[in-house]
Length: 161
Ligand code: HEM
Ligand code: HEM
Image (tube, rainbow, N blue to C red):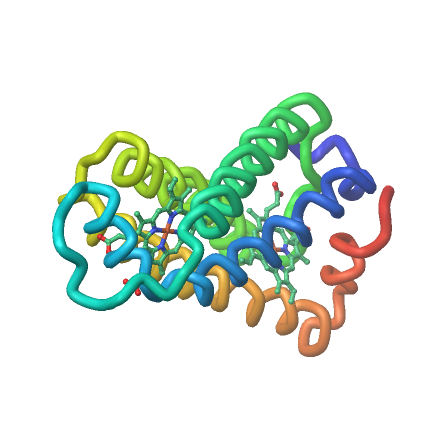
């Protein structure tokens, strides 16, 4: 994976669009439980004050973008992580974890909503929380590289190469 020096313009665009959509969906989610109850023919605990189609389709878009991204990554590759071996390994596994959560959160949401498996709703919400926490740690590490280690890492997700 260390053959390329940086990310392509498309890889960079998909990274930032995905980040925005994930954060948006995380905050535009309150009330999905009640919308799900209604969809499953149960009486919702609270009035449905969300447009569930927005949460659902933004989430589906995240899934499509992650699949596109993994295909791009397999075809083009990704630059090797800078720094000592242990830090590069942490980045590798951190990114793998992010990809796993990025796939799992919308798939579980889809099984809940389209598959009608109401019991998976809580697992979906839990995984979505995990995704936001790991992505937060990831953002802190990106800033640490840029401003403490001063290895210009952030620029790799800003300037196409
Ligand atoms: C929900 C939010 C986010 C998600 C899901 C996410 C996900 C990812 C993933 C999966 C990668 C690995 C790319 C690859 O090599 O295939 C990556 C790389 C990267 N991300 Fe994020 N990211 C998010 C937010 C951010 C934020 C807020 C920043 C900056 C503060 C950031 C900066 C970077 C940088 C600099 C890289 C390239 C790392 C390298 O070159 O090794 N990301 N991101
Ligand atoms: C990465 C994308 C997604 C994120 C970050 C996300 C985030 C969340 C969060 C935080 C909740 C909890 C809301 C609350 O209890 O107040 C939730 C609930 C829910 N989401 Fe998502 N979601 C995503 C994708 C999807 C997709 C693709 C679907 C359906 C196709 C979906 C369907 C649902 C449903 C049905 C619930 C209610 C679950 C329940 O309370 O039992 N989500 N989502």
